[in-house]
Image (cartoon, rainbow, N blue to C red):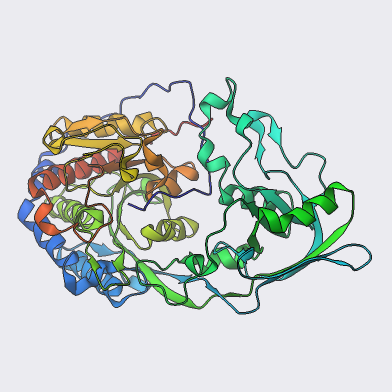
Length: 528
């Protein structure tokens, strides 16, 4: 599960309810051969996967590191050994996609001048100005216009772009959001975090035809904290090359004091022309999602697929050489997907398949922003329609919140691990009640304590794993997790702390649920 961060897309929860409907003939009962195959998921097998993936030999599976590639190969080998059909490109297990680690060149610069050619600001990257890692690579010269906070929110009847000629311009926007935006009855239904994010300002600027964005910030971190020269594997940011090619718009931030001459001139009605040069260095590397499929029995559903996924990557190593093995995050979810896939193969060998195909997917670069899931959804492999997603992320521990005042757990109540020994959070239930009902059906034979409680608040967990790219595209998706604990994103997230019997129960639940979804009616999505 990725660390807390702002998100590019905001979803508004529907205040109405959509009654969950029966899944049809499948209900909670699997064919006998399928039930035996699922019940055959063993804690010992899951342990063997987690022990391998979370060993020091894989060095934390960090993107850009050899350990990440070794994890890809181990997962592919496991699929093949278990009889799962590779579903990647050219008959392989792999879906390649390009990413890059943003680097700041020596010539990043912002200048602005008035109609007479007089310089208003002239700033190299440094204390008062620098491009943001989200930046595109285009250098742009264009009119500069001020757009308040740069927020367009129709549901709140708010549009900072109203009456502003932003098309073809570089827009200057204040960070965050105005305090009064989230007051009143409409605001009660809106999560303020995404609307105030830089990503949302970028989306609004692009939607209004802007060619560049500069965000005014009250506090700027040191430029080398944002753009480290030699970051560790853990500290490295990555972005997709396809996104860079599609969105070359430069994005930067400027200190409030440095922006003051610009705002003053614009407020006086002066016409300013700015040149924003990001000098982004983007060197592509290729990483892979790892995909396996078990075909369904009904040819009329061949062009659909249920996707059972988990992310294979973790944090790698830090600047001190410490390894973040990520046993729970997310060797546990990866093991569950491998175990569920093997169960489907056993069922097929005994003559039972669900109506639809089930794709078993191990995503890469989730910790860098769900990059693998995004790449998959841009070009599904195989080229079929994903009709539902079950996402397993951190499914091997007992939830533990020892101190709600700790910044890592703000927004959560105190939870003792002994009280969560059998609990599993189901996130996304309010977006897809049908799919949540199918999870409950599947649980009749498993007996976990399912909690539907984290769709709002809870540090925005809804947006922090590979379920979100599916939901953002209108595809029903649920995020299954046993929750946070003090070892989350630390070097102490190790194998000996995993509850393998609980992990086996969760794997059986995911396998049963995937079968029910693949056999039954297509789940619906709640949309605002």
